[in-house]
Amino acid sequence: MSFESDATGAAMTVLRAMVTIADATVARNTGQLTLTQFRALRVVADRTPVTMGKVARELALNPSSVTRACERLVALNLLEKALNPLNRRETLLAPTAAGRHLVNRVDLDRRQVLAAVLGRLDPDARAAAIAAFAQFAEAVEAYESDFDSLLRRAN
Image 1 (cartoon, rainbow, N blue to C red):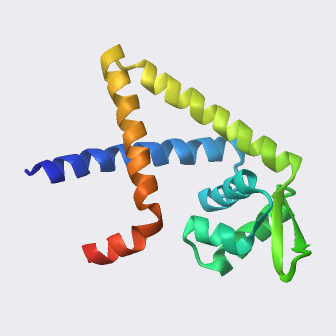
Image 2: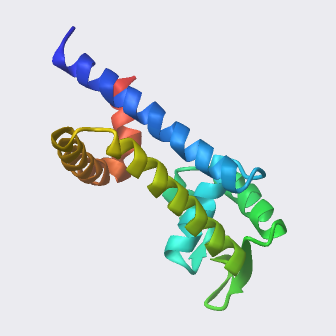
């Protein structure tokens, strides 16, 4: 097996573990939101005020899918929307207090789970994992806007 396939396999295992944590913490705190709906709420909470188009671009999703997700969040009183006074064709989104509270609860749960997992590692392995996470996040950020072209090259 080549280094690349070993590294990719290890990264896939970590990715599945992180998605499991993401799913479990959203399910524990909401029970009624999909991971995509929560991701939309997260984008709005982090970038308020934001347009639906910006949320769609951030999530790399079809605008109609984001509209449906955000309409569900509005119905659950987690988001509020208003017409953009500078461009009446755009809708601005902002989290409600309940929406911000939900995002904070999920973040707290995720921190607790990650701290417990990291706490099971010996100090050297924990330090190495933390350093690797930081470098990995930087690498993802560098390529984030170009995932589509990376995927096209792979096909």
